[in-house]
Structures are given as structure tokens and as C-alpha cells.
Length: 227
Length: 129
Image (tube, rainbow over the protein chains, first blue to last red):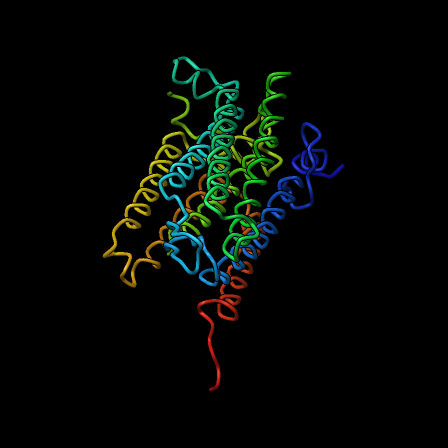
């Protein structure tokens, strides 16, 4: 026990939480450190893509048409910008739904006199919205991958295919993990309800989800838009 | 939507952020307050508008042909990245340690990316004859 009641509070931690000498929750520190390491992982994947960009000997190519003899048949540029723009918008909106889910958990016991307050205060609604938007993004990615394979681009076709599928595939795997994580939060919410004391659990899931979003912001520009 | 226009509870990294009553906790909440619903709405709108502009400029051949195309896209992307990190990930409002844990590796990652592009990519510098 320390001399100060405030320090007692920090050492014991309300609700059995994991406080460190910094006064910060150790799980949140761990998640930020993990996100920092993920920055370096995705930087290496993006570097690989950019280094190999424009060095494929055979098509299909991302932004350029491919004509014989480089390709057996004439091929259009393979990237579908309208579809990817839609999936980018979906992922951005999922981030909005995620922050609203967190705010709903934090404000669970605040009075909600209007219908608008009740909608904004429904953690289940916003967690469902985030999950569905995340799954929609994965649907867009599945469609894109399938159409690329049908157009003759696989992970083994050329340098563009190898680096593109590796980079976007890793990102898709992260989105999948995020959707599963959000699904576990939804299960907890249905089983016993997410209390304001659980906000830290939603917060660290939200940090991961937003990180997946910012990685896509970088990928969308560097891979899809810059020719 | 009255209550959401006031600052929602926040600061989950801190011991004072778990709903315990008292003035000290209220003060801690104020110190680490998260954005309001209105701010979240504006952030989403700004992110959407920047994305629309990014895609719009992609379809302007005259602009794509200029030297401004790539820098403008990189700047817009960096602005979106910063907005999400500062407001949605609450880094603007959270503890300094979290900022250091994120920006440190991010700087290393960006420097590594640029270095690799200079070494092996289209930015490669050829020294000597």
C-alpha cells in the first residue's frame, strides 16, 4: 500500500486491470507496440511491391495494356479502380462504425431520451455494422482476386502478381482476423452486455481495426492510384 | 442525440478511465476526452471527400501527366492516414508513450521504405560511371 490513495488505485487497478508503473494499461501498451511492429511488416511488403513495380516481363500489368508478343493475347490494364474505390469507402465507413461502437460502450449508462440517442448508444448495432462492412470489404477483395485469376494473373504469373497478391493478401488476412475479433466482442455483448469497464477491450480491438484501415489508405494510393 | 454532442468518455489507457466515480476520475476523463459524435461525423466526411478527390484526379489524364500527380496523391494519402490515427485511434488525446510507440516504428518503416527505393527501386541513385 502506498501513502497516497491515488497510487493505491493505480497499483490495485479497478476491475482487476493490468496497470504498469507508467499508470497505463499494459494491454494497450502491448497493442500499440504490436501496431508499431506491424508498420514495419507492411512497410517491407509495400517496399517489395514498389521495387518490383514495372519490372514484370510478361503481363497482365496493373495500369498498362499488354499486347503480343509480351502477352499471348491483348490484355487490358488489370486494376479495377471503381471497385477498389468502393471497397476503400466501405473500409473507411467501418472505422466510423467502430468508433461509434466504442463510444456506445463507454456511454452505456448515460440517459438516451431520443431515438437518435438510442441508435447511437447501441453497441450491438455498431459492432454488427463494423463486422458487416469488414466482411463486405473481404467480399470485394475476393471478387478482385477471382477476376484477376480469370484474367490470367496469379501469384506465379509475374513480379507484379507475386508482390501484389502477397501485399493485399496479408492485408486481407489482417481484416479477416479483425472481423473474427469483432465477432468475439459481439458474442460477449449478447451474452452479458459490454459494460463501460469493458471499454478497454473494445478500445484495443478498435485500435487494431483502425490500423488495418490506415494500411489500406497507404495501399490504395501506392498500389492502385499511382501509375 | 443530445448526449453525444458532449465529450464521450475516454482515455482507456489510464487507470482513471474505467467508470469509477469521483472528481479525480472526472478530471482524468476531461484530460483524455475522446472526440464527440459531431467530430467523428466530420472526420468521416473529410476522409470520404479526400478519397473522392484522389479517385477524381486519377481520371484526369492531363493532371496524371504532370509532375504534381504523384506528390498530390501522396499528400492526400498522408493527410487521411494522419486524420485516422489522430482522431479515430485517439492518438491526439492519448498518452505520450502511445505516440512514441507508434511514431518511432513508423519513422523507421518510412525511412527503410525510402532507403530501399533508393537502393533497388525507381529512385535508385547510380554512383560512378
